[in-house]
Length: 131
Image 1 (cartoon, one colour):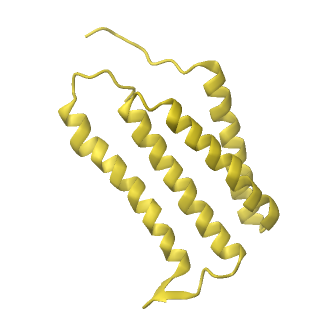
Image 2: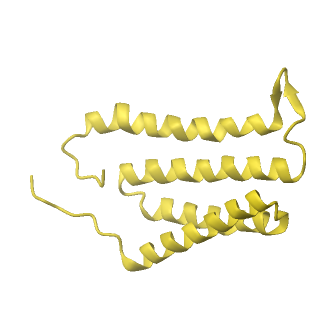
């Protein structure tokens, strides 16, 4: 097998780096309880994550990891909004609160990565992938 490389075009890399800046601003805003900025930062963070996911869809490893990242950002953002708007402690069912609903996208992300590592990757060992 050849020693092949996966190279990220510079315009994609710049977008990924900007994505990290938005993500940090979102989480810093959450930590500092800066509601308007935190909520506003959800949109560029999530939009760029979706763009990155669609641009890397030709590689199963990338699409799985990036989809998991989109789900992580979604769960994280929902959790933040539930705290900002004070419905995080309201009960949904039994001892589960609205904040606990963030487990749904977190679990979906873990499920996608589990599928990739436990099912897809072992069956496609000879396929060129990024991971």
